[in-house]
Image (cartoon, rainbow, N blue to C red; front, side, top):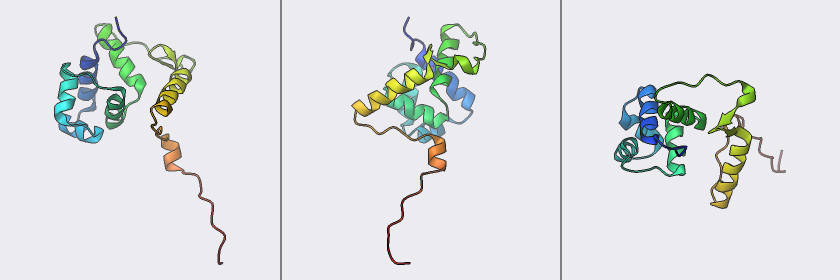
Length: 132
């Protein structure tokens, strides 16, 4: 069994929980409604980049997708909440997964998105010396 077995059903579950119309979710995710439908029915498989867009549009994290996949693969059983010491992504420590993900982004020539805190509080730009 692959870690992504049941991905279409997991995506459907996350979209239903979101409560918005699929067209609104697709728009927020910057993908077409037709492609979202294809991913949710299993006709197409999203790339990692597209999964990232979809999770951004749903305002979810990778852990939420992993939880939905586990529910689908476990036939609806919800896993118990994990403690902060067990912060795992698909069974691996979060920091390890994030490090590998960032390395892949750099290797592909993509710039990783800044975290929400960095966006809310950007570092101050240095001022140019000039007239006072």
